[in-house]
Structure formats: structure tokens, C-alpha cells
Image (cartoon, rainbow, N blue to C red):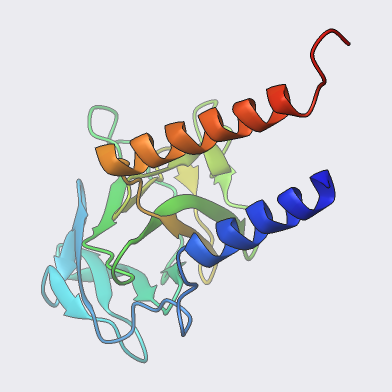
Amino acid sequence: MHDGKLALLLATSLALAPPLPAEAASLVGTSVTATDTFWTVGPAATAVVGNGIEFTLSLFGVDGFTVDVTADAIVMTGIYSLADPHNLTSPFLLTVGDLNFGPGLVITGVNFSTSQTIGGLLGSDGLVASDVSFTTDSVSLNYNFVSWPRGASVTLTFDLGPAATVPEPASLMLLGFGLAGLAATRRRSHPAGA
């Protein structure tokens, strides 16, 4: 008897579950922004994600890095070797924002990988996963005090999940009635005086 109730409860739960997205989330075709605390972002601070490089980071007219935003990741590649520990007061911090994956989807995590070791300067550990931070729609990479070889790249791949939703009061009331009904059926299934 309890197996039938459990099956009914499971079927009802699955029927009320939100539908899965029909297609994979992608940034292609969306507009994203980039800022950097040290380098100049170009050709503009906003770009539409497509094939190829969206941003180039330059300093005094010399290109230092490319930033390619793909369907589900950001790839930052060094154009020339960087080993400059002089910027002690302002970290090199790249932020790519306005990452819109579609209705109800937000960034819940970021996976970090490098094409080769990007070592540290002045006692730094080099570029490591803890140098990455994120919000629901942006990702930042702190690349201060590193020795970045020419051609080395960092790939930041996004983990996506549903945006947190606040349950409606009616949903909570329905859940409460369901739990109360479940408790009542458990009490009735035990004979009095047993």
C-alpha cells in the first residue's frame, strides 16, 4: 500500500518539475563587456560573441593579450611574454560581464585550466584557480605577479544552473497541506492501541 502512495508522490513530483532547456545555453550572439584595471580593452569595451577574438588588451599601443568569449567559456591568451612586477598597487584584473545565457540560467561555478604553467613573481604562486572569482553574470581573473609565456592561455569554462527563485506563498501552503496529509495517513495506518 505504501508503494502505491510513493509511486503517486514520485509521479506528481516529476510532473510538477520545471522543464529542462530545449537547447544548450550559449553566449553566441549576445553582447558582453570587458574591463581591465591595467590594460586598455579594445577595440571597444562591448562586443557581440561570435567566431574569433572579442577583445584585445593593450598598453601604450602594444597588444598584450587576446580575449575570446566562446559559447560557454572565456579564453585569454598572451601575445607576448609578460613578466612585469612593477604594478604593486593595482592588480591586473580582467572582468568579463553581462554574460547572459538565457532565461533563468546563471553562472554557478567556473572551471580553470591553462595551456601551460603560468608561473609567479615576487613569491606569488603563479596563476591558479583561486585567482578566479565570479558572480551570476560575470567572471574576473586576477593575473597580478605572474610570468605569462607567449602563447600561454587560460580557459575559464562556466558551470550553469537555475537562478535562485523564492517560492510563492501558495506553493508553501500546498507543500504544508501535502505534508499534513502524509502525516495523517501515517497515523491512520496504525491501529489504535497497538
